[in-house]
Image 1: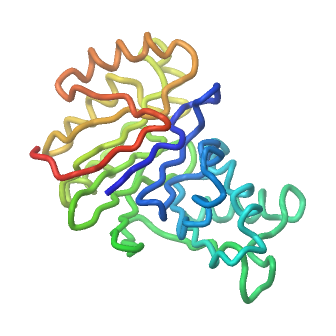
Image 2: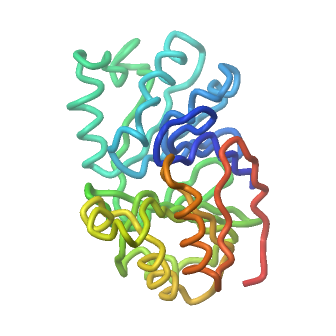
Length: 259
């Protein structure tokens, strides 16, 4: 399974877009500013999008993607998200004020996009992959995802803070070969981290210990400023997991690993 990181930053800077991952050319996980690195031809190949939550850095480029696709021969794009996220898109984006309502354009019978509500525990069959909606914990309702096929699997927490449900769900699924976790703040910003519901390294360490095995861990959503200081803290706190930093514009071949 191929995982292309279009963007994974907690903010914008040259060459660093916000969260958007492309899986095997046809499945998009979140639609942040990283989407703009796709060519028009690559956009045409996308069949489905799974969204973690409604925050702008994870949905900002869905409207622009649809604008590129409308009027083409592309089939209706299927978007899957929690009800809170779908409601936010309908009420605040595709409302004919901020952006045209692409759920009924160019026609009711053949819209550019269909917004599908999912719940925790739902299993989607998308191409050759199974996508499981995982419970997660953030400042707004949010979901993580387990995505796998016969060859390998990875999981993504989305924006997340300490909880039991995400880890319980992972322990009840086939083990992952790549685990992508959010870590936005350092321990000195613990109060802000708890308010924003983003992990800081020692909090993430406590939750990683809830997992019954030790997969390769990749850190996403790092801040634009003071990044190196946070990385030092991450590598110290999570030394048992030897975490790697998720790299924008990088392609990972997710393959079965021994855990």
